[in-house]
Amino acid sequence: MVGSPIPHLSTEVDTSTMTEGTPTNTGAGHSLWQACAEQLAQELPEQQFNTWIKPLVAQVNDDFSKVTLFVANRFKLDWIRAQYVGRISALLEKLYGQTIPLELVLTPREAQVRVHATALTPQGVGAIPEPATATEDPAQAQFKNRLNTALTFDTLVEGTANRMARAAAMHVSGTPGQLYNPLFIYGGVGLGKTHLMHAVGNRLLADRPDAKVLYIHAEQFVSDVVKAYQRKTFDEFKERYHSLDLLLIDDVQFFANKDRTQEEFFNAFEALLTKKSHIVMTSDTYPKGLADIHERLVSRFDSGLTVAIEPPELEMRVAILINKSRAEGTEMPEEVAFFVAKNVRSNVRELEGALRKCLAYSRFNQKEMSIQLAREALRDLLSIQNRQISVENIQKTVADYYKIKVADMYSKKRPASIARPRQIAMYLAKELTQKSLPEIGELFGGRDHTTVLHAVRKIGGERQQLTELNQQLHVLEQTLKG
Image (cartoon, rainbow, N blue to C red):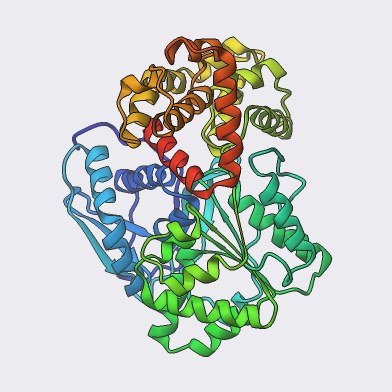
Protein backbone atom coordinates (compact mmCIF):
# COMPACT_ATOMS: atom_id res chain seq x y z
CA MET A 1 0.00 0.00 0.00
CA VAL A 2 1.24 3.51 -0.77
CA GLY A 3 0.54 6.96 0.58
CA SER A 4 -0.04 8.06 4.16
CA PRO A 5 -0.93 5.39 6.69
CA ILE A 6 -4.65 5.07 7.20
CA PRO A 7 -5.72 5.94 10.75
CA HIS A 8 -7.20 3.01 12.65
CA LEU A 9 -10.81 3.65 13.64
CA SER A 10 -12.79 1.43 15.96
CA THR A 11 -15.30 -0.46 13.80
CA GLU A 12 -17.10 -3.77 13.89
CA VAL A 13 -19.07 -5.77 11.38
CA ASP A 14 -21.51 -8.37 12.69
CA THR A 15 -21.17 -11.38 10.41
CA SER A 16 -23.57 -13.63 12.30
CA THR A 17 -26.45 -13.07 9.86
CA MET A 18 -24.48 -12.71 6.63
CA THR A 19 -25.19 -14.90 3.67
CA GLU A 20 -23.01 -15.73 0.72
CA GLY A 21 -22.57 -12.67 -1.47
CA THR A 22 -23.10 -10.20 1.37
CA PRO A 23 -20.60 -7.31 1.18
CA THR A 24 -17.96 -7.57 3.90
CA ASN A 25 -14.65 -5.95 4.59
CA THR A 26 -12.16 -5.95 7.42
CA GLY A 27 -8.62 -4.76 8.07
CA ALA A 28 -6.93 -1.93 6.18
CA GLY A 29 -9.67 -1.70 3.56
CA HIS A 30 -12.32 -1.21 6.22
CA SER A 31 -10.17 1.42 7.95
CA LEU A 32 -9.79 3.26 4.65
CA TRP A 33 -13.55 3.62 4.27
CA GLN A 34 -14.03 4.57 7.92
CA ALA A 35 -11.37 7.28 7.62
CA CYS A 36 -13.20 8.59 4.55
CA ALA A 37 -16.56 8.48 6.37
CA GLU A 38 -15.18 10.35 9.38
CA GLN A 39 -13.88 13.12 7.12
CA LEU A 40 -17.27 13.37 5.41
CA ALA A 41 -18.95 13.57 8.83
CA GLN A 42 -16.86 16.66 9.55
CA GLU A 43 -17.56 18.28 6.18
CA LEU A 44 -21.29 17.65 5.74
CA PRO A 45 -24.29 18.88 7.74
CA GLU A 46 -25.31 16.19 10.21
CA GLN A 47 -28.66 15.54 8.50
CA GLN A 48 -27.02 15.05 5.09
CA PHE A 49 -24.37 12.71 6.51
CA ASN A 50 -26.90 10.60 8.42
CA THR A 51 -29.24 10.37 5.43
CA TRP A 52 -26.82 9.59 2.60
CA ILE A 53 -23.37 8.53 3.84
CA LYS A 54 -23.81 6.79 7.18
CA PRO A 55 -25.98 3.90 5.85
CA LEU A 56 -23.45 2.98 3.12
CA VAL A 57 -21.60 -0.32 3.36
CA ALA A 58 -18.16 -0.43 1.72
CA GLN A 59 -16.21 -3.32 0.26
CA VAL A 60 -12.54 -2.68 -0.56
CA ASN A 61 -10.68 -5.22 -2.69
CA ASP A 62 -7.69 -6.80 -0.94
CA ASP A 63 -5.31 -5.25 -3.48
CA PHE A 64 -7.13 -1.88 -3.26
CA SER A 65 -8.01 -2.12 -6.95
CA LYS A 66 -11.62 -1.05 -6.31
CA VAL A 67 -13.96 0.30 -3.64
CA THR A 68 -17.58 -0.82 -3.89
CA LEU A 69 -20.31 1.05 -2.03
CA PHE A 70 -23.58 -0.81 -1.42
CA VAL A 71 -26.66 1.42 -1.45
CA ALA A 72 -30.14 0.51 -0.20
CA ASN A 73 -32.22 1.61 -3.21
CA ARG A 74 -32.09 3.11 -6.70
CA PHE A 75 -33.12 6.60 -5.61
CA LYS A 76 -30.34 6.83 -3.04
CA LEU A 77 -27.84 5.38 -5.52
CA ASP A 78 -28.66 8.02 -8.15
CA TRP A 79 -28.58 10.83 -5.60
CA ILE A 80 -25.24 9.74 -4.10
CA ARG A 81 -23.75 9.39 -7.59
CA ALA A 82 -24.84 12.91 -8.49
CA GLN A 83 -24.04 14.67 -5.23
CA TYR A 84 -21.25 12.85 -3.39
CA VAL A 85 -19.24 10.48 -5.61
CA GLY A 86 -16.79 13.18 -6.69
CA ARG A 87 -15.92 14.12 -3.12
CA ILE A 88 -15.74 10.48 -1.96
CA SER A 89 -13.36 9.59 -4.81
CA ALA A 90 -11.15 12.58 -4.01
CA LEU A 91 -10.99 11.65 -0.32
CA LEU A 92 -10.17 8.01 -1.06
CA GLU A 93 -7.35 9.12 -3.36
CA LYS A 94 -6.02 11.51 -0.71
CA LEU A 95 -6.11 8.85 2.03
CA TYR A 96 -4.68 6.01 -0.06
CA GLY A 97 -2.16 8.02 -2.06
CA GLN A 98 -3.41 7.16 -5.53
CA THR A 99 -6.67 6.83 -7.46
CA ILE A 100 -8.97 3.94 -6.53
CA PRO A 101 -11.91 3.11 -8.84
CA LEU A 102 -15.24 3.61 -7.07
CA GLU A 103 -18.42 1.66 -7.89
CA LEU A 104 -21.96 2.06 -6.55
CA VAL A 105 -24.21 -1.01 -6.50
CA LEU A 106 -27.56 -1.89 -4.95
CA THR A 107 -27.37 -3.90 -1.72
CA PRO A 108 -28.34 -7.56 -2.27
CA ARG A 109 -31.85 -8.12 -0.89
CA GLU A 110 -30.74 -11.00 1.30
CA ALA A 111 -27.98 -8.98 2.95
CA GLN A 112 -28.73 -8.00 6.53
CA VAL A 113 -25.63 -6.23 7.78
CA ARG A 114 -25.38 -4.33 11.01
CA VAL A 115 -22.49 -1.87 10.89
CA HIS A 116 -21.16 0.09 13.81
CA ALA A 117 -20.15 3.20 11.91
CA THR A 118 -17.90 5.76 13.52
CA ALA A 119 -19.69 9.09 13.71
CA LEU A 120 -19.41 12.40 15.48
CA THR A 121 -21.72 12.63 18.48
CA PRO A 122 -22.32 15.63 20.77
CA GLN A 123 -19.95 13.97 23.24
CA GLY A 124 -17.18 13.45 20.67
CA VAL A 125 -16.28 10.54 18.41
CA GLY A 126 -18.05 7.33 19.30
CA ALA A 127 -19.41 4.14 17.81
CA ILE A 128 -23.09 4.45 16.95
CA PRO A 129 -25.00 1.33 15.89
CA GLU A 130 -26.40 1.66 12.38
CA PRO A 131 -29.59 -0.36 11.92
CA ALA A 132 -30.31 -2.45 8.85
CA THR A 133 -31.63 -0.36 5.96
CA ALA A 134 -35.13 -1.85 6.10
CA THR A 135 -38.08 0.07 4.70
CA GLU A 136 -39.88 2.03 7.41
CA ASP A 137 -43.59 1.44 7.84
CA PRO A 138 -45.31 4.81 7.15
CA ALA A 139 -48.00 4.01 9.74
CA GLN A 140 -45.28 3.74 12.38
CA ALA A 141 -43.13 6.56 10.99
CA GLN A 142 -45.87 9.17 11.37
CA PHE A 143 -45.66 8.88 15.17
CA LYS A 144 -41.92 9.48 15.24
CA ASN A 145 -41.62 13.21 15.77
CA ARG A 146 -37.80 13.27 15.29
CA LEU A 147 -37.45 15.97 17.95
CA ASN A 148 -34.29 16.43 19.99
CA THR A 149 -35.61 16.80 23.52
CA ALA A 150 -32.45 18.64 24.62
CA LEU A 151 -33.23 21.59 22.32
CA THR A 152 -35.69 23.71 24.28
CA PHE A 153 -36.36 27.38 24.92
CA ASP A 154 -34.63 26.98 28.29
CA THR A 155 -31.38 25.82 26.70
CA LEU A 156 -31.40 28.57 24.05
CA VAL A 157 -29.41 31.68 25.03
CA GLU A 158 -31.42 34.79 24.20
CA GLY A 159 -29.90 37.96 22.77
CA THR A 160 -30.56 40.79 20.36
CA ALA A 161 -29.64 38.51 17.46
CA ASN A 162 -32.47 36.02 18.07
CA ARG A 163 -34.95 37.89 20.31
CA MET A 164 -37.65 38.48 17.72
CA ALA A 165 -37.41 34.97 16.29
CA ARG A 166 -37.51 33.45 19.78
CA ALA A 167 -40.55 35.51 20.78
CA ALA A 168 -42.41 34.48 17.61
CA ALA A 169 -41.47 30.82 18.13
CA MET A 170 -42.71 30.88 21.72
CA HIS A 171 -46.00 32.43 20.60
CA VAL A 172 -46.44 29.67 18.00
CA SER A 173 -45.72 26.93 20.55
CA GLY A 174 -48.37 28.37 22.88
CA THR A 175 -51.10 29.09 20.32
CA PRO A 176 -50.41 26.99 17.19
CA GLY A 177 -52.56 27.50 14.11
CA GLN A 178 -53.31 31.14 14.84
CA LEU A 179 -50.92 34.06 14.32
CA TYR A 180 -47.59 33.80 12.46
CA ASN A 181 -48.63 30.89 10.27
CA PRO A 182 -46.38 29.97 8.60
CA LEU A 183 -43.39 31.09 10.66
CA PHE A 184 -40.38 31.46 8.36
CA ILE A 185 -36.98 31.76 10.11
CA TYR A 186 -33.91 32.54 8.04
CA GLY A 187 -30.22 33.18 8.64
CA GLY A 188 -26.75 31.75 8.11
CA VAL A 189 -25.53 28.34 9.24
CA GLY A 190 -25.05 27.62 12.92
CA LEU A 191 -27.13 30.49 14.31
CA GLY A 192 -29.78 28.42 16.10
CA LYS A 193 -32.61 28.10 13.56
CA THR A 194 -32.91 24.35 14.08
CA HIS A 195 -32.73 24.75 17.85
CA LEU A 196 -35.71 27.12 17.73
CA MET A 197 -37.78 24.68 15.67
CA HIS A 198 -37.14 21.81 18.07
CA ALA A 199 -37.99 24.13 20.97
CA VAL A 200 -41.38 24.89 19.39
CA GLY A 201 -42.13 21.18 18.98
CA ASN A 202 -40.98 20.25 22.47
CA ARG A 203 -43.01 23.06 24.10
CA LEU A 204 -46.17 22.11 22.19
CA LEU A 205 -45.82 18.43 23.16
CA ALA A 206 -45.29 19.40 26.80
CA ASP A 207 -48.68 21.18 26.67
CA ARG A 208 -50.42 18.72 24.36
CA PRO A 209 -48.82 15.25 24.50
CA ASP A 210 -51.30 13.88 21.95
CA ALA A 211 -50.39 16.47 19.26
CA LYS A 212 -48.96 15.13 16.01
CA VAL A 213 -45.63 16.90 15.56
CA LEU A 214 -42.95 16.18 12.95
CA TYR A 215 -39.50 17.70 12.55
CA ILE A 216 -37.95 16.91 9.18
CA HIS A 217 -35.16 18.15 6.93
CA ALA A 218 -36.18 19.22 3.43
CA GLU A 219 -33.98 16.47 1.92
CA GLN A 220 -36.02 13.83 3.77
CA PHE A 221 -39.23 15.31 2.38
CA VAL A 222 -37.72 15.04 -1.12
CA SER A 223 -36.88 11.39 -0.42
CA ASP A 224 -40.40 10.67 0.89
CA VAL A 225 -41.99 12.19 -2.24
CA VAL A 226 -39.82 10.05 -4.52
CA LYS A 227 -40.64 6.91 -2.54
CA ALA A 228 -44.37 7.68 -2.72
CA TYR A 229 -44.18 7.99 -6.51
CA GLN A 230 -42.08 4.87 -6.91
CA ARG A 231 -44.25 2.71 -4.66
CA LYS A 232 -47.58 4.38 -5.44
CA THR A 233 -48.16 4.97 -1.74
CA PHE A 234 -49.52 8.51 -1.88
CA ASP A 235 -52.42 7.70 0.44
CA GLU A 236 -49.92 6.87 3.20
CA PHE A 237 -47.81 9.92 2.30
CA LYS A 238 -50.80 12.26 2.55
CA GLU A 239 -52.01 10.64 5.74
CA ARG A 240 -48.61 11.26 7.29
CA TYR A 241 -48.12 14.88 6.28
CA HIS A 242 -51.68 16.21 5.95
CA SER A 243 -52.75 14.99 9.41
CA LEU A 244 -50.05 16.83 11.41
CA ASP A 245 -50.76 19.47 14.02
CA LEU A 246 -47.28 20.98 13.61
CA LEU A 247 -44.81 20.57 10.76
CA LEU A 248 -41.24 21.75 11.35
CA ILE A 249 -39.22 21.65 8.13
CA ASP A 250 -35.54 22.64 7.92
CA ASP A 251 -33.65 24.18 4.99
CA VAL A 252 -36.47 24.60 2.45
CA GLN A 253 -33.92 25.99 -0.04
CA PHE A 254 -33.25 22.31 -0.86
CA PHE A 255 -36.55 22.25 -2.76
CA ALA A 256 -34.92 24.28 -5.55
CA ASN A 257 -35.44 22.79 -9.04
CA LYS A 258 -37.50 19.89 -7.65
CA ASP A 259 -40.87 20.52 -9.29
CA ARG A 260 -42.60 17.37 -8.09
CA THR A 261 -41.49 17.93 -4.50
CA GLN A 262 -42.62 21.56 -4.62
CA GLU A 263 -46.03 20.48 -5.90
CA GLU A 264 -46.49 18.00 -3.06
CA PHE A 265 -45.25 20.46 -0.45
CA PHE A 266 -47.71 23.05 -1.78
CA ASN A 267 -50.53 20.52 -1.38
CA ALA A 268 -49.41 19.62 2.15
CA PHE A 269 -49.03 23.32 2.99
CA GLU A 270 -52.59 24.11 1.88
CA ALA A 271 -54.04 21.08 3.67
CA LEU A 272 -52.34 21.96 6.97
CA LEU A 273 -53.37 25.62 6.86
CA THR A 274 -56.96 24.66 6.05
CA LYS A 275 -57.15 22.51 9.19
CA LYS A 276 -55.39 25.26 11.19
CA SER A 277 -52.24 23.27 11.78
CA HIS A 278 -49.00 25.25 12.06
CA ILE A 279 -45.96 25.23 9.79
CA VAL A 280 -42.50 26.43 10.81
CA MET A 281 -39.76 26.59 8.19
CA THR A 282 -36.10 27.60 8.06
CA SER A 283 -33.91 28.70 5.19
CA ASP A 284 -30.54 30.31 4.54
CA THR A 285 -32.26 33.31 2.93
CA TYR A 286 -35.55 35.19 3.07
CA PRO A 287 -38.46 33.87 0.94
CA LYS A 288 -38.08 36.20 -2.05
CA GLY A 289 -34.35 35.43 -2.10
CA LEU A 290 -34.95 31.71 -2.71
CA ALA A 291 -33.80 30.57 -6.15
CA ASP A 292 -35.70 28.14 -8.38
CA ILE A 293 -38.75 27.88 -6.10
CA HIS A 294 -42.22 28.32 -7.65
CA GLU A 295 -43.65 31.80 -7.15
CA ARG A 296 -46.88 30.51 -5.62
CA LEU A 297 -44.86 28.61 -3.02
CA VAL A 298 -42.70 31.65 -2.26
CA SER A 299 -45.85 33.74 -1.77
CA ARG A 300 -47.11 31.13 0.75
CA PHE A 301 -43.78 31.23 2.60
CA ASP A 302 -44.08 35.01 2.81
CA SER A 303 -47.73 35.06 3.91
CA GLY A 304 -47.12 34.58 7.63
CA LEU A 305 -44.23 36.02 9.64
CA THR A 306 -40.66 36.11 8.34
CA VAL A 307 -37.92 36.70 10.93
CA ALA A 308 -34.15 36.67 10.73
CA ILE A 309 -31.59 35.27 13.15
CA GLU A 310 -28.35 37.24 13.07
CA PRO A 311 -24.82 36.29 14.13
CA PRO A 312 -24.78 36.61 17.94
CA GLU A 313 -23.53 39.88 19.43
CA LEU A 314 -20.57 39.88 21.84
CA GLU A 315 -22.57 39.66 25.08
CA MET A 316 -24.67 36.82 23.72
CA ARG A 317 -21.54 34.93 22.60
CA VAL A 318 -20.05 35.31 26.09
CA ALA A 319 -23.25 33.98 27.70
CA ILE A 320 -23.32 31.01 25.31
CA LEU A 321 -19.72 30.08 26.16
CA ILE A 322 -20.24 30.35 29.93
CA ASN A 323 -23.51 28.35 29.83
CA LYS A 324 -22.16 25.59 27.60
CA SER A 325 -18.92 25.26 29.56
CA ARG A 326 -20.99 24.81 32.74
CA ALA A 327 -23.00 22.13 30.97
CA GLU A 328 -19.66 20.39 30.31
CA GLY A 329 -18.80 20.56 34.01
CA THR A 330 -16.20 23.32 33.66
CA GLU A 331 -16.36 26.94 34.76
CA MET A 332 -14.97 29.27 32.08
CA PRO A 333 -13.73 32.56 33.59
CA GLU A 334 -15.53 35.58 32.18
CA GLU A 335 -12.36 37.17 30.80
CA VAL A 336 -11.58 33.96 28.89
CA ALA A 337 -15.13 33.85 27.53
CA PHE A 338 -14.75 37.47 26.36
CA PHE A 339 -11.44 36.63 24.66
CA VAL A 340 -12.93 33.66 22.77
CA ALA A 341 -16.14 35.54 21.95
CA LYS A 342 -14.22 38.50 20.51
CA ASN A 343 -12.31 36.16 18.22
CA VAL A 344 -15.11 33.81 17.11
CA ARG A 345 -17.92 35.90 15.66
CA SER A 346 -19.59 34.06 12.81
CA ASN A 347 -22.04 31.61 14.42
CA VAL A 348 -22.94 29.53 17.46
CA ARG A 349 -21.65 26.30 15.89
CA GLU A 350 -18.15 27.70 15.47
CA LEU A 351 -18.34 29.13 18.98
CA GLU A 352 -19.15 25.68 20.38
CA GLY A 353 -16.29 24.21 18.34
CA ALA A 354 -13.88 26.76 19.83
CA LEU A 355 -15.15 25.93 23.33
CA ARG A 356 -14.58 22.20 22.77
CA LYS A 357 -11.01 22.90 21.62
CA CYS A 358 -10.32 24.97 24.73
CA LEU A 359 -11.82 22.33 27.05
CA ALA A 360 -9.91 19.49 25.38
CA TYR A 361 -6.65 21.46 25.46
CA SER A 362 -7.18 22.26 29.16
CA ARG A 363 -7.89 18.64 30.09
CA PHE A 364 -5.13 17.14 27.95
CA ASN A 365 -2.48 19.51 29.31
CA GLN A 366 -3.97 19.55 32.83
CA LYS A 367 -3.94 23.34 32.86
CA GLU A 368 -6.43 25.81 34.26
CA MET A 369 -8.58 27.72 31.77
CA SER A 370 -6.94 31.06 30.98
CA ILE A 371 -6.60 33.55 28.13
CA GLN A 372 -3.14 32.18 27.37
CA LEU A 373 -4.49 28.62 27.21
CA ALA A 374 -7.33 29.75 24.92
CA ARG A 375 -4.82 31.55 22.69
CA GLU A 376 -2.77 28.34 22.40
CA ALA A 377 -5.81 26.12 21.81
CA LEU A 378 -7.19 28.41 19.10
CA ARG A 379 -3.92 29.48 17.49
CA ASP A 380 -4.82 28.01 14.09
CA LEU A 381 -8.20 29.74 14.08
CA LEU A 382 -6.69 33.06 15.23
CA SER A 383 -3.96 32.82 12.59
CA ILE A 384 -6.48 32.30 9.78
CA GLN A 385 -8.72 35.08 11.06
CA ASN A 386 -5.94 37.59 11.45
CA ARG A 387 -4.60 36.76 8.00
CA GLN A 388 -7.94 37.01 6.21
CA ILE A 389 -9.86 39.91 7.75
CA SER A 390 -8.42 43.40 8.01
CA VAL A 391 -9.99 46.83 7.78
CA GLU A 392 -8.25 47.33 4.44
CA ASN A 393 -9.74 44.09 3.12
CA ILE A 394 -13.17 45.14 4.34
CA GLN A 395 -12.87 48.53 2.64
CA LYS A 396 -11.86 46.94 -0.66
CA THR A 397 -14.59 44.26 -0.51
CA VAL A 398 -17.34 46.76 0.31
CA ALA A 399 -16.09 49.23 -2.34
CA ASP A 400 -16.12 46.49 -4.98
CA TYR A 401 -19.60 45.33 -3.92
CA TYR A 402 -21.15 48.80 -4.12
CA LYS A 403 -19.06 49.82 -7.15
CA ILE A 404 -17.28 52.81 -5.63
CA LYS A 405 -13.57 53.59 -5.34
CA VAL A 406 -11.58 52.44 -2.33
CA ALA A 407 -10.37 56.04 -2.02
CA ASP A 408 -13.97 57.06 -1.32
CA MET A 409 -13.70 55.22 2.00
CA TYR A 410 -11.18 57.79 3.25
CA SER A 411 -12.54 60.88 1.46
CA LYS A 412 -14.69 63.66 2.91
CA LYS A 413 -17.33 63.19 0.21
CA ARG A 414 -20.82 62.73 1.63
CA PRO A 415 -23.26 61.79 -1.17
CA ALA A 416 -25.47 58.82 -0.19
CA SER A 417 -23.91 56.62 -2.86
CA ILE A 418 -20.61 56.88 -0.96
CA ALA A 419 -21.62 57.60 2.64
CA ARG A 420 -23.82 54.51 2.88
CA PRO A 421 -21.16 51.98 1.81
CA ARG A 422 -18.67 53.77 4.06
CA GLN A 423 -20.97 53.28 7.07
CA ILE A 424 -21.44 49.62 6.14
CA ALA A 425 -17.66 49.17 5.98
CA MET A 426 -17.29 50.81 9.43
CA TYR A 427 -19.96 48.50 10.82
CA LEU A 428 -18.21 45.41 9.39
CA ALA A 429 -14.84 46.63 10.66
CA LYS A 430 -16.26 46.79 14.19
CA GLU A 431 -17.93 43.39 13.86
CA LEU A 432 -15.14 41.46 12.16
CA THR A 433 -11.89 42.91 13.55
CA GLN A 434 -10.37 43.65 16.93
CA LYS A 435 -9.89 47.35 16.14
CA SER A 436 -11.23 49.96 18.55
CA LEU A 437 -13.56 52.75 17.41
CA PRO A 438 -10.74 55.36 17.32
CA GLU A 439 -8.52 52.96 15.35
CA ILE A 440 -11.29 52.33 12.82
CA GLY A 441 -11.96 56.06 12.52
CA GLU A 442 -8.27 56.69 11.81
CA LEU A 443 -8.33 54.12 9.00
CA PHE A 444 -11.35 55.86 7.47
CA GLY A 445 -9.59 59.13 6.77
CA GLY A 446 -9.00 60.28 10.35
CA ARG A 447 -12.66 60.35 11.38
CA ASP A 448 -13.72 60.79 15.01
CA HIS A 449 -14.71 57.66 16.96
CA THR A 450 -18.22 59.08 17.44
CA THR A 451 -18.69 58.99 13.66
CA VAL A 452 -17.81 55.29 13.67
CA LEU A 453 -20.11 54.63 16.64
CA HIS A 454 -22.99 56.37 14.83
CA ALA A 455 -22.40 54.24 11.72
CA VAL A 456 -22.22 51.00 13.74
CA ARG A 457 -25.46 51.75 15.59
CA LYS A 458 -27.25 52.96 12.47
CA ILE A 459 -26.38 49.95 10.28
CA GLY A 460 -26.87 47.51 13.16
CA GLY A 461 -30.34 48.88 13.83
CA GLU A 462 -31.37 48.99 10.19
CA ARG A 463 -30.15 45.43 9.70
CA GLN A 464 -32.92 44.26 12.02
CA GLN A 465 -35.56 46.09 9.96
CA LEU A 466 -34.45 45.97 6.32
CA THR A 467 -34.39 42.54 4.70
CA GLU A 468 -32.41 43.72 1.67
CA LEU A 469 -29.69 45.31 3.81
CA ASN A 470 -29.45 42.20 5.96
CA GLN A 471 -28.98 40.06 2.87
CA GLN A 472 -26.26 42.37 1.53
CA LEU A 473 -24.42 42.25 4.86
CA HIS A 474 -24.74 38.46 4.93
CA VAL A 475 -23.12 38.23 1.48
CA LEU A 476 -20.31 40.60 2.47
CA GLU A 477 -19.61 38.68 5.69
CA GLN A 478 -19.46 35.36 3.90
CA THR A 479 -17.14 36.85 1.27
CA LEU A 480 -14.80 38.28 3.88
CA LYS A 481 -14.69 35.05 5.89
CA GLY A 482 -13.83 33.05 2.78
